[in-house]
Image (cartoon, rainbow, N blue to C red):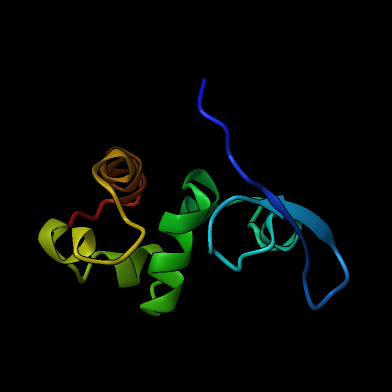
Length: 95
């Protein structure tokens, strides 16, 4: 059995959470800022943050990029591509 050393952390908003990695992201804050609808709501938090960091917040902005460009973003993985393709197809767009 693998043991993980989790440390108690407190974010700047005062949320307390345990993390075993160096990632500073507060899971409570992430859940609060996750969209309730739209294509970004279907993605995992790292993939959503990768697109937001690139300034991609609408399906039209997403359609300007190729799959290869999207996959180079830190936090974006191949598991997100089917969700992105579906969202684009629904809007009559593609990567």
